[in-house]
Amino acid sequence: MGSRKRLEVPNPLKVVTLPLLLASLVGSPAIAQSPTYGVGRTPTAEELRLMDISIGSTGEELPPGSGTAEEGAQLYVQKACIGCHGAEGMGGLAPALRSQRDADLPVWEKERILPLRSPYATTVWDYVNRGMPLGLEGTLTSDEVYSLTAYLLFINDVISEDQVLDQESLPKVSMPIGDEFGKPHEFKLNSPRLEGYPY
Ligand code: HEC
Image (cartoon, rainbow, N blue to C red; front, side, top):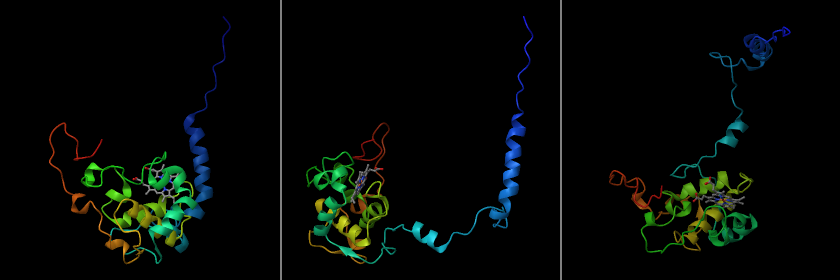
């Protein structure tokens, strides 16, 4: 049996610490702007503007603009919402945007449809504005988001076809869920957490 030379295993500590040390020496002048930790920098006004898009329940952050369901119906096709969500919000591979259940059922017994079960209509605007169309998020104008929101609320019988949605009217839309959204349901062991909640 020939004696085999032991493999030289590099000391992992040395391997990791040297580049780290170098990186911190090279990088530190550029990033040492926070007096406490020496990292980070103040975002620019433009960076903040692009991130500051949340619309709260009262809608006070809503931008100017307006739209109707009629315009929204056209945009729903033009912006390819129809390709993922199906005609009139039904039958696509993406979640349904319109309930197919009986209109007279209590809202908790209908499907989990955002433009139907949201506690606030402003949530629908915010979701479409920040998240759709999937893959091209952030490309819709404010008018287009008002129109698409109007269309989604109209096909769920929440508003009438001719209602104009804008900064003033959208927060006033009363959603069918009413006060039921936050109401705690009676809990019994081994029963679903919420009435009508499927999981
Ligand atoms: C490429 C496919 C695709 C396109 C195009 C698309 N969506 Fe979606 N959409 C999705 C998927 C997938 C989800 C579910 C995302 C999730 O639950 O995380 C979704 C979710 C939604 C929801 C929330 C549904 C719910 O009940 O949770 C709304 C509202 C919506 N889309 C509206 C639109 C509108 C309006 C357009 C057109 C401007 C659009 N989508 C275009 C794929 C798409």
